[in-house]
Image (cartoon, rainbow over all chains, first blue to last red; front, top):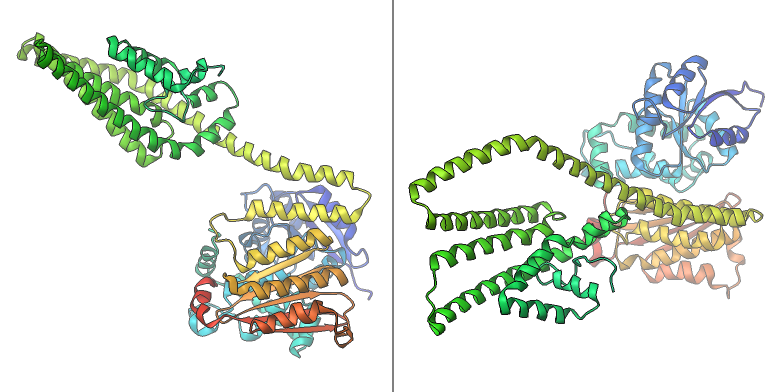
Length: 218
Length: 411
């Protein structure tokens, strides 16, 4: 495949991690065009270089203390040209969901392999959403796995198909494997995942608050 | 023998004076107590002696706080306070009551038996003053580290003691001066007190604020010390181990993974959450297997369930995880607790295996996964191929547990 490499900015407050990640990324497909270590310099760098994808740590110093979510929110006018992929060590649902709601197109953990993160970056650059098993688990917990009838009708619920896709991703299936399992095309799986992401970003605050309360997150 | 004379927190009857003195002198506490009581009965000197020591000998915790190592002291203080306060307070009241009764009895005995005429106008007020002082002092030690509710109770006892003292003093004064002069004197005293309060209030307020600031600084310090202790015990030890084992990558990975898990639990675990849920137990199992085999196992759970009926599915999951890390490498576990059933999926990306080729005498999969699930009324399916192996476990919530399962489950 001889495509133009994806231009990437890495935002993380640990220089060691940035260096390691840069070395891990596939150089034929990804070109790192900028780095930043805190909220303010990240917003500045992203506005300057206009990358295709920003690899964004959830926890960042600076700004108003909002971390990665604040960066994504401050760069909203650059969408859809600039897309965000959250990368975090945090297991806390509220961190992950905050950065997704601020506009990130996906979430991966920092223990992810170089090949996987390169793949995720290209996927995000192509307009798809990237869900790790854990994020899929969060989503299933947030929207509930129960039948639609018992839930509030005003809430934007996941369709049965979207639930199935989320479950398979939580089980560790790739998009391709999920497509084979459900007898649908990979493209359809990608559409489902993108729809789930949109619902997660648009779902009203009340619902997420209640969910967080039930899980003892607040 | 104790190096400093302090009043211990435990083993007190009134204020810990005798216990502290006994500890300091290396004598049995009983002897010291008997000595003080004897001195009291002989001439009343014992009471004065006791009161004097009560004022000037510091509480054990005060001593700890001033003598350095403030952090430890504060932490212990907080922990012990609730246990000790109730007991001390109860005993103190009993003792005061007993002393009052003894005093009344002694006075009556003197009057009736020895025929000495008592000046009740003098003895009554003095007794009331003494009672008030005892009441107020008794609160002094316990006021500091009490909770809000207990503190209100103490402050009202303090006020009661103060009122008793004032009433006693007034009654005494009424014996010497006339009523009119007394009222005038009271008025003057009131005005003077008001003036003094006006002048002193800012100073007292400032001292109070300083003390509060110091207390909260101490709390912060305590918390930081606790975090530092945790990091020292866990992270630094692990880092040292990692440096020692730098040549063996598998050990390094295992150590780092175990430490990561530990730290995550420390940082993100909500202590108010109920334990023993499906999530907890699965994560514990996965952690143990990770430690033994050095392969990462990621556990994702949705919903929540508790109860011994989960045992078979957990044991089968454990067997499946073991198989995964032994033959394939990293393992992904997904568990979902629904109102009607619990499902667990254990997936790896190994080369897969031929299910029918497993010899009949190999009990691993057949017995401990499939057999176990079927005996428990559930099902186990094993899907294996080039893309890896997935073990799918399904266990319905037992009928009598149906309600519990539903309650236990949280969306």
